[in-house]
Length: 245
Length: 57
Image 1 (spheres, helix red, strand yellow):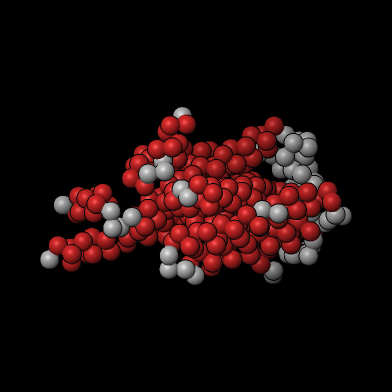
Image 2: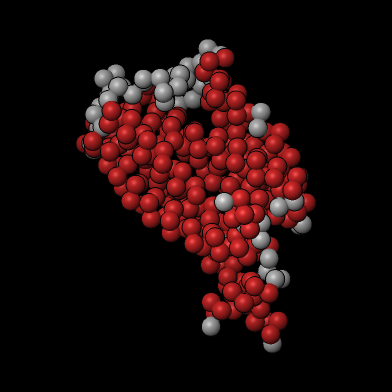
């Protein structure tokens, strides 16, 4: 296993691995996505307090968890790139940023839509919501900084430092509902908040769907990034001209 | 008639507008991510192809 991981430092091997892995993430994503949506929208019963409005949590909670997880992956990959100078770690960090930003947008938008019928307002400057919004700004800052340099290695170094510094926001988001008196409800997962087993199953499937979505998108986007970075390599030329012929 | 009432013919009644717009936004965002990722990959291959063709000429 360790040897396999080490081999991924080679752009050519990493590209081949991404090509092999994409369908293994994409197909389960489509199948589980259909099952998860069916479970969330049809099988799960209505909540005794929130009625059918609670069904938004099946996309809100997984996207919110993934917005933080992807940021963690991005910062760790950036750190690996900084310390061990592994270019493929820089690639993973760079391609993760827009995906994480999209998850954050989904979490914020669905949270606002859920908030209107439940709280009576789209938005409040509460600790959980504000720290999640800061996470979106961190993603945008990371992407802007990464695009500000012509040299991808310099861009990776600068943006990785920003990503690592921004890690401080993750525990703030997670513990905000404990540390401060917020309008946002407490933890949904692991606190017995989901009374019906079907609710737990639907949420579990949808979480897995979001993990597979992230993995599928990373492999597709990483291939593009590797081709761009390694365009002067012989293997890329052979690969591209091979696809042409 | 408010927009919430207008969409109440859909499943989930008075919550239909909120539930379906949340799922709609998520679907559009995910679809955009996939379409952009695929089109960027294809465009990169086309650009590299023409670059290598120019070099060979």
